[in-house]
Image (cartoon, rainbow, N blue to C red; front, top):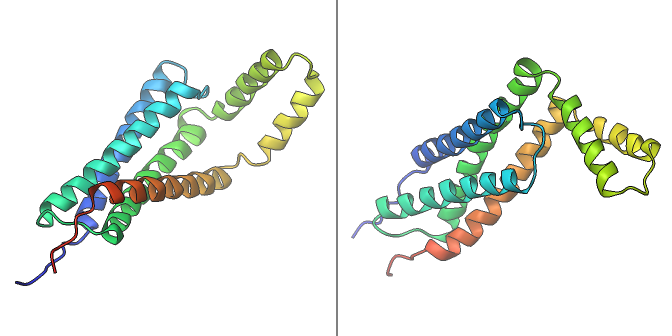
Length: 174
């Protein structure tokens, strides 16, 4: 019996595009609600659910189409590929948002963050908060945000792929 492993390219493109597309749709929804610069636990939770859901769906589909088998190595490859494509799509949207659609989004985010910091830490002076915001502004260029987004997306993809791969892995009988 010949063992044939299927390629990951189609799964990476399909589920990575689905991941990136869902994240962009959610981000556009936040934009129309004027909540795109606020972040928060609920926004993070929705993005995590989208990421885990699309990645696990991709792993399960790959296993199903691979005769019911997937190794941990294959799961890591498929998952990381999905995370890479999804991250790239999200990064491209983020750049378009901050450079074209709403060039003032970073200033809105910093002002919102400043207000949050002053409310949650009343003992901090405005000057201290302004100093912290100025430090953050140094790391807010599109290139740095993109690099951090890609690093975080791949790290997230690795962790989910590793855990998901351990859950869905099924070895071929020898």
